[in-house]
Length: 226
Image (cartoon, rainbow, N blue to C red; front, side):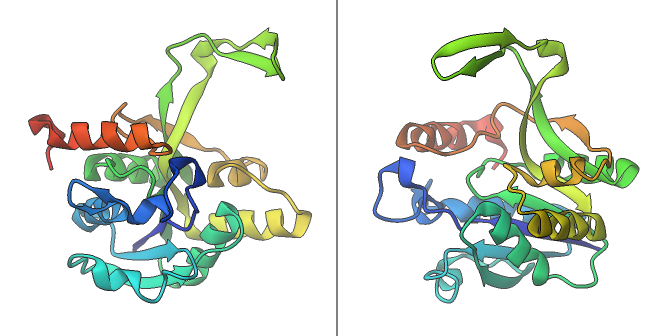
């Protein structure tokens, strides 16, 4: 069985809104609802855990449309990593877990299924984009090196893992005081392989008001398939 942990606990300060970005309207629905609906439609996903800011966890689901797979809502932690860990505590018997950031509202069920399929082959997998631009390493405002872009990908969510592997990765990170920028990094530090599948450019991360406007435009396109 497969559980999805949708992380929507951030404050979204760069959005410049008094409300967390995950509850802002996108095409007439709260931003987070778009991710929920994608996972609702993903055939392999059995249940969904939604991680919300503490003040929203009890009441916000009442504002959502019908999401039959939504099994639990939990309060997030002080960091994204802590929020995912809280979500993991709300799942029990599932063998696989998919972690997704609600800030990527244009995720499609086909991508969720592709990442899960790769995880079943390798134990862990992420969606990612090949680097199209030259990627530089910097120190402040000074360029100190150039990466081989053929060996670099830009990682997205969803990310899928064998559930016990992800739990172990979080336990060891917490014990070591290690803070990562995504869950795959926690698995990598255990020496475990992480596969990647190509995600579309439309699987954008909504961080600013401009991103929200772009997501709105993409949703209006007929080929968006929504």
